[in-house]
Image (cartoon, rainbow, N blue to C red; front, top):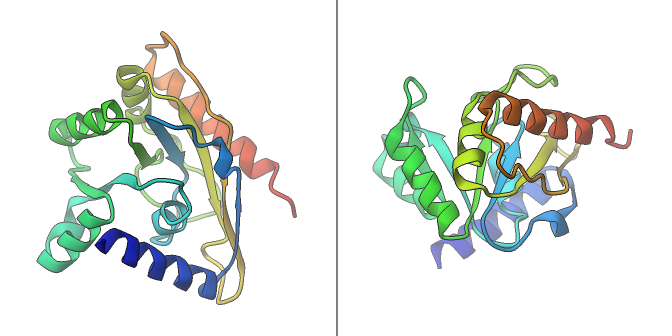
Length: 189
C-alpha cells in the first residue's frame, strides 16, 4: 500500500517537474531482469522506478539508511543498503535472491554519479551479478535529469541482452555499458 501511494505521488511530481518521455517499457521481460542504468542525479532511480511494470529493487548507499524514517520509506520503495567501500557479500546475496525470485533488480553500472553527461567506466559488479544470476540485462539510459523545471527528461529501456555462459565479468560490464551508450547515441535531438 505504501509503495503504490508513494510511487504515484513521486511519478506525478516527476511529470510536473520535467517533460517526461518513457520509451521501450515493453522491453522489460517478465521474470528476473536486471536494469543496468547510467547515473547522473538523485532523480535517476525515481524516474526509472516509477515507470517499470513491476516494483523495482535497487542498491542504495548505506548512508541513506541512517535516518529511521528515510530507511523505512526507501526500503518500502525497493531500496536496500550496500557498502560501496568493500565487497558487500550480504548485498550481493540479497541481489541474487531477488533475481531468483523473478524480481526487477536495477543498479547504476558506474557505481556513483557522473558529474558530466559522459558515462564513467563500468564496475565489474554488473558482470558478476549477470554471470551468477543468468538473468537478462536491459540497458537503461536516463537523460535530462539535470534540466531545470519543465525541461525534457526521460528513460529509454533497451532490448534485453543475454550472456549465456559468459563468465568474464569485465567483458560483460563493457558490453552492457556499450548497450547503454548506444541508447544515448540514438537519442533524438
